[in-house]
Length: 127
Image (cartoon, rainbow, N blue to C red):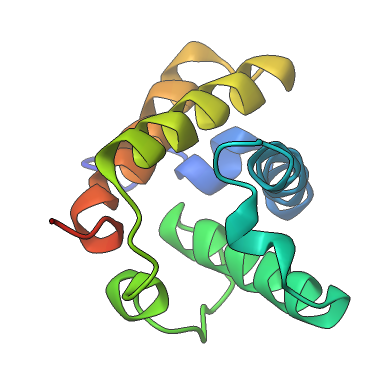
């Protein structure tokens, strides 16, 4: 944010509960997508719950919230998975669909999508 009096993205999205709802919808879409859901297929319930909480914390912190993300960086977390550009494009489609379903305002939707897309080079593996 360029103006310190301007509300953070965290506040504009509605805080922790709103970001948790976005996370839940987004992860549900990803895990149930037949083209990319296999990335989560072998995860235990405990692993899924832990990853969900790390995702909420990551997004809250990145949006300017009071949480502290304790997970690994995005590159370390995704190295070896072989995620492709086309799979990331699909992830972005799910991101947009999630935000539209939850009726996130256009400015906030654009900010969230720009942030998620900014992680692309850290997550995909160039062949």
